[in-house]
Length: 163
Image (spheres, rainbow, N blue to C red):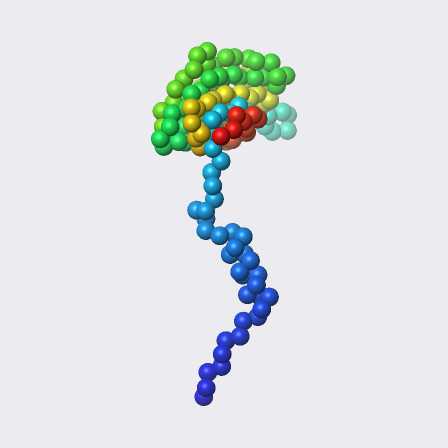
């Protein structure tokens, strides 16, 4: 018995090639770099739970991590805002240098409910060279009785200096 040649359905072949071209190798993406940004990170010093709108106080840790393996960045401002947009606290009065892959944290204590469920941080940073932007996250954690809650908020760029 003679083997029959494999026939490929043309539309299937075309769609497979198109997908391969569109998505290509995973490492082919380019990372956008910047020389500075203003980043907003939402924060919650308390949240509602249950049907009676009871509150759970939360501790907030703002984490700023320099993602560049070879270039330092400078954190120029870290301000904490309440739900009405009023600055509640200045966490940094002078520039702080973050070495490559270094991190710095700022804490809102669980006993400080000033920001409420509508708080946020504005973080300003800069660099002498274009770098991969830092990872900026607010991590919230709290416990009440036998319940515990934790979650995080990713920072969002609101202004970019550019490369």
